[in-house]
Image 1 (tube, rainbow, N blue to C red):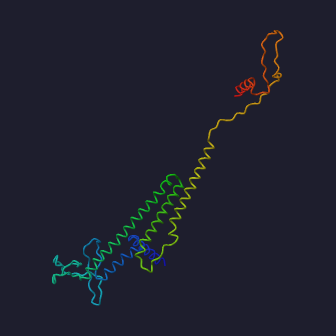
Image 2 (cartoon, rainbow, N blue to C red):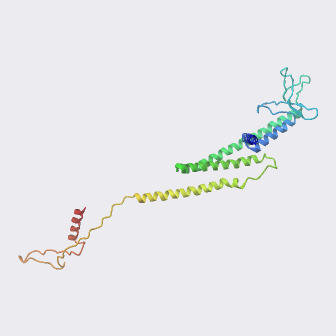
Image 3 (tube, rainbow, N blue to C red):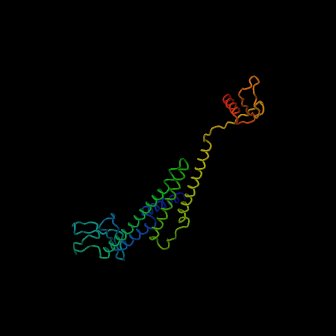
Length: 281
């Protein structure tokens, strides 16, 4: 049981790696189909993708071909060797490969080039999209620190991964067999936009919170001069302000002004207040 489970996991890992290497399940399917059409014509795919010749298989008398490469003398070298689509039969002076085999190999190269081009375009689109998302969120990341910064960075990578998954799905879809073709899942289609909206809301709330915290600290630490309450001073009555006492010793003596003790704005009151404040300072 354990051995079977381990073998199953190894197989799944191998299949995943093959899909990943090819650019996705759709691209892998396209490469496999392209090779199958070439093999059906009795030609094997070359070990070097840029090779100008491909190995040719041994014809099966009952039809088709054995998956074994033909051997013979190549007129170009005069030696016994594995034969390719470019090998020349010294007895006839013509290629060992049939016209249909040569045509099949040429078609295989064209199809492969188209698949490679589509895969490269997908890769460029993914790279551009991930860069755009990182640039859009860079300013928000620089304003954070600690756990908030880590969470923001994780959310950014999630948005990038979701956007990449959508691009890969769209690019691979055209190469999948019709029975496997399916529309993108709603959760996948809406995830990137949803994350983008959540991020915008998060950024707005964060800015508001930071503003509230800043205002609170500003109010708490704002230095203001202490308020001093004016002491209450009581005055002894000195008579009505309207009376002007005179000295009996001299009839022509100059009148002496008298100030009201009940008026705190009078000079006497102001002087007493100043002296009181100086003593109690």
